[in-house]
Image 1 (spheres, one colour):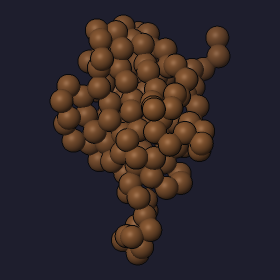
Image 2: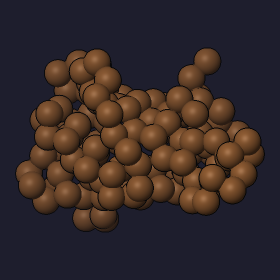
Image 3: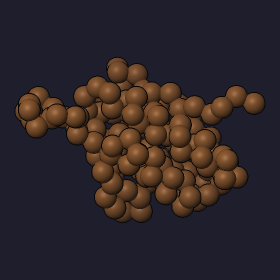
Image 4: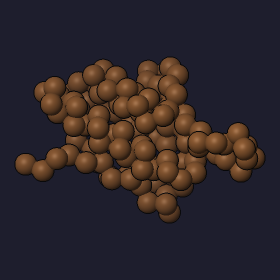
Length: 124
């Protein structure tokens, strides 16, 4: 069986959203948060989930030119977690988010939690 991977979103998508279908929403939220933190994001509580933000390295040199990547992760049902990228930020944010989500899905699978990632969709 192939390793589960979450691909990065297309640069053409301005406001990407990904749905994770899971058997354990709380474990999925905790693991996604931990993996985003491992990729350099800072996490803060937000409603039922959390918001993770990452500023590009050395953004203090050109604060006006640098934008942060902001990711909102929330449960929307007892079996669904939505990853909503509110601000895509500068390169390499799509790669870091995809790596964090892939790591989270793999770690959850090894712990016995079934997680299926959908495709990135553009939010209208």
